[in-house]
Structure formats: C-alpha cells, structure tokens
Length: 300
Image (cartoon, rainbow, N blue to C red):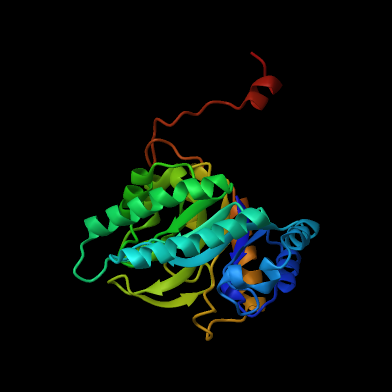
C-alpha cells in the first residue's frame, strides 16, 4: 500500500508547496482538491497553463499525482442540472488525461427531496454509465466516493455493479460509512476489488453515528489500524489517501502538524507484521508444523 494526502489539508498551498512538502514528509502521492485556494481545478492556472510542467514537477520530486477531486454529483432529479454536472466532470477528465492523472473523484450525492433511495441509486448509475466511456477514452478511472445518506457499502456496491465498467470504481471513505453505522469489517470485504482508492480520516462519533469532530489518526473511532489490516488481507495495493478537511474546518490543526503525524501513523500500520490467524480463535487443533528451516537444520 502507498500513502498520500488530499490537498483539502492545505488548501492555500500552491502546487510547488504541495509537491515538495509531500516529498519531504515521506508521502508517495497526492490528491488535488484545491491549489492555491482554487477548488475548481480546471480553472486553476498552475494546472491549466502547462500540463508538461506539472508532470515534470511531480516526476522530479518522485511524487504521484494520484487523483483530481471534484465537487461533482449526479444525484439531481433535474436533467439540466445532471447535464451540467456531466460537463463539469468531463472538464476534470480532460485535465486528468493531459496531466497523466489516473483518477477523477466525484461524490455519490444524496437522496433528493420527494425521492427515494432506490430511484436515486438507479439514476446515479445511469448517469455514470454515460460518463464511463468518456473517462476510458482519456485513460482515466472515475472514483465515486460514498457519503451522506448513500454512504454504505451496499449503496456503493449497487452503483458500481450496475454500471459494470472498468472505468468506474469507488473511493472508499470509512468515516462516511460509520455515519451510517457500518463498520470496516462489513464495508471493506463487500467492496473488495471495486475499491480504487481509500480516503483515510479519523473522527469522534456519538452512539447514533453523528460525526462530532475530526481528530488525528488513531485517536478516534474509525479503527484506522483495523482498516489497514483488512486491506492487507484483501491484497489492496492502492493509495491510503489521508483526508484532513481543513478547507472546511479551519479550526483543525495546521497541515505542518497534521500531515507528518498522519504519514507516521499510516506507515506504522502498513509496516506492522500481520497476525497469522487460524480458522477459529484459540483453535486447539491449529496446525503446529515445523518450519522448512527447522526441517533443514534437523533432517530426519
């Protein structure tokens, strides 16, 4: 697994600051959501002006440009709004293609007023189906992030399975699943190979799943270490993308504090030796076979 961060943690940083700090702190890649205060990335001068210069900046620092994060949703019941959102998504896909960025992220959205969950999911899947070939032609994969009242793995599985296109996968956010009272032990095995990227954050929740506050990794109820352990068991080899939403909550710690703590915590989780589990807890019949090394040292 590789470790990156989303630039929501540092929305005021310019592109050079994002990339050089990523390298110096030990991250492998970044997801861009804001650059120098600009959230509409296709309009960001640093990205739109010279794609070759952007690619060169990332390459010379040894940092991956993993994803462009958009605010696009395809949940509206208004066809004109959906068409405008598709056009916006196409702008992001075009930019990602020019930058050599493999992923563009969008939000699954929410159930609209006077609508229901089943219709909303079917409508989102239909809209995504028409966007998938456009992304594929640009060499880009669309990542749909779970959230709001469509935050469970069941919701996401329905959409990704209905679209059934290699250019559409999910960006999994376990904090958003916990808002819907779904733990990682249910979410991650269900999503499996449909996961293209994982957003990692930690937070304090109340007993009803209400997110009360974001906290440093390991200090909340998101069971981040357990998430990483489960992902190891799934042979997931993509990015753990740290999300620290300072862009919306400026009371959160400064990125120069939050980012080093996050990369250190995630590195310890990734590097931790995985527990070898038997079929049953405390299984007295678990195999007790000598290692090959022991056999070689003591041949019979």
